[in-house]
Image (cartoon, rainbow, N blue to C red):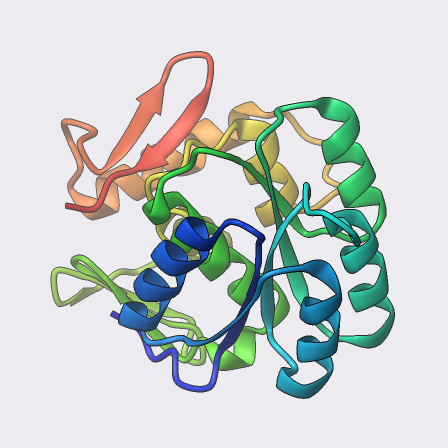
Amino acid sequence: MQNLKGIKILLVDDEPNIIQFLEMGLLNEGFEVQTAPDGMTGVNLAQQFHPHIVILDVMMPGMDGFEVCRMLKKTENVAIIMLTAKDEVDDRVKGLTLGADDYMVKPFSFEELLARIHARIRNQFPNLMGEVVLGDFRIDDRRKEIQYQQRVLELSTTEYELLKFMVLNQGIVLSKAKILDKVWGYDFGGDENIVEVYIRSLRDKLNDKEHRLIRTLRGAGYRVDIS
């Protein structure tokens, strides 16, 4: 669990079943949630609600998700996760060009959406995160400290950022390129194999000898499994 008090999420989708499912799940997680059945209602509601996260469907009658995204990014400090039934590169590029922060293709698991929401909060609203507890991990970003099974891990700055990134995105396969981008930054000019070196070090410190916690998916990347 983590302290999610005050974190606001706006759902904009014209499918009532999806709205109901997501609203129930997010309320159970502790978020403040508002919903809108169409784009214009979503824009108007955002001006009153001032959400931190908007989960936005692309294909809606009238004002589509692209237009909603464009308008919200002009007026609100908000992270936008766009939803689409089509896994088309052009749609993803268009959404990201207009300012969307992430993209998910329907159908998707609630657990993955939740992980992506946490990632957006961490990246764009870190002051709201406070202390995060996920499984046997306790992350205190203010102290830059991670505990595992009630034991404080001795981590370098880079090890801390890498483990935090992977734990907050637990359940999601993270490629080496994605990890380098988020942990080392765009301007890193080194070898991707540095990720392997740091993963090996983390496994040692976590006593993850059988790689059950940090899993390697050959050709795809790594995934943290918390169960």
